[in-house]
Structures are given as C-alpha cells and as structure tokens.
Image 1: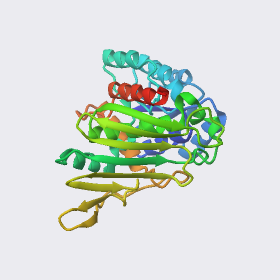
Image 2: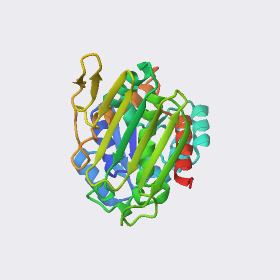
Image 3: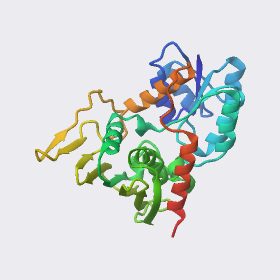
Image 4: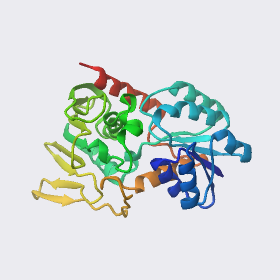
Length: 327
C-alpha cells in the first residue's frame, strides 16, 4: 500500500518512524515546510511533497495519517475520504465535520480511525480490566500535569496548537485521558470544575482544573489537569472497600494492594518500554505502535475494531466544552 503522512512535525515524524517498521508499505510525506520535508527525506528516506494534490498526481494513495494541527484535521480528512483513502487521524480536540466525515466514510466503505493512544497502553488496559471486575463502587484521584514550555522544549508553545484557546494544553490532556477513564469507570453522569489561570504563561486560557466526575456506575473521581506543574506528573490512586491500586504513568509503576496480606504488589508489564527523547518519561512509544498496527490490520480486512471512535469522541468533546465553559 501507499501510505501518506500529512504533517511532518513531531507527531508526523513519530508516525513515519513507526510505519517504517512495515517495509511492505511505501511511505510518503506531505508538509508545506521545506525544512520538515528535507528532514524527513534525509532521516527516513521517504518521498515528500508540498501538498496532497502534488502527492496524488504522482501516486495512487491507499491510506492517510493526518498529523497536522487539530483545527486543520476536518478538511484534510474530508479531502482524503473524497479520494478514497482510509484515514488515521490524531486527536482532533474539536468536533468539526464529525458527522459529515463519518457519513462519508461509511458511504464509501472506508476506515476512519481516531487515535486514542492511552487505550493501547498495557497499564491502562490492565486498570480498565481490574476496575470493571471490582465489586464495590470506586473512587479515584488522578493528576496529570506538565509545564507548558516543557511539552516541546525545542519550540515555543505559542508556535503550535497548544497555545490556541480552542486546542489548548489542558483540553488536550482531557481529550487524551477521558476515553480511558470512561472505559474503566463508566459513562459520565455529572461533572463540575474549579479552574483558574495561576501562571504567568503567555496564554489566553485557564491553565489548571480540578474536576469532579460522577459515573453512572456509581464510581466517582477527582481529575486534576494543569499545564503549570514544573515536574511532569501522571499519578492515579484508585480505591474502594475491596480494591486499591495506583499508577505513576510509567510501565514499571502499576501497583495493586493485596488486601489479604496487606502489602503492595507491583504488576509487571511484560512488554518492553521504548521512550522517545525529548518527551516526559511517562510517554512511551509502544501504544503508538499498537494503534498503527490495529489500523493497518483493519484496512487489510481484519475484524478487529478501533478502541475509540468519532461518535464516542464527540460526546467527550461536548463534555470538555461543558468543563471549559461553566462558571
């Protein structure tokens, strides 16, 4: 298959690198920045083009990976679908053209695959399974934060989408984590938030949230989200009368409390962990690899389903809108 990666920034380069593990496919790149095209050509030896039309004039393309800034996704996805490409898209953060693109994909019999990387992590998969098996309602306290300038230390946070209020850093954290929280604890029946701007960062949005979440299963939690924490953190405690576990965001930090013997037991994730230089230690490469495999297998006719989809994501984005806009 011919596969095009549209957008050769940090995420696009990651997708190209992982796709190169599938040598049976021909990987192409599209980016309007000469420097990015040149870097991808030299680093990955892929043919690169200024725009999608130019790539289509030279190749019949089967699949597209949309790795541009979120606000551009909707129109690019639509163009790819119109040219009969299966589409893998990074998280969108806004629901622009969701219904239209979903309808078009179904009409043409094409795969429209939405990235939700944390649903492909072995640690979150383990927590989802164990929480669903727990007998009593559970509480959780979850904190995810990292100082905004440290997200991409090689560039200014004002130069890419996390500086935009519509696709801001806190919104991205929520969009990344709510899918696995909902998968574990159940659909959300009620939510409220206390929020503010505590930093001197050059951003026009709230930089921290304390969110209270009620699930329709009886589970409930506190989700703290921020872009001001100077030491990057991802930590969750989950507890109930007959259940307790915690996780620090890394493959070796998943711990379950043995109630009978009153001791902590570290759960060993057998899969080896790979980390990309420049990112926080809790960001590992394996789940990115796994969701690519899932997408390619679906394109090639496998019966597996994506872990997340546009319909579910639309509900989460509506929820995030409520959290951001309530006073």
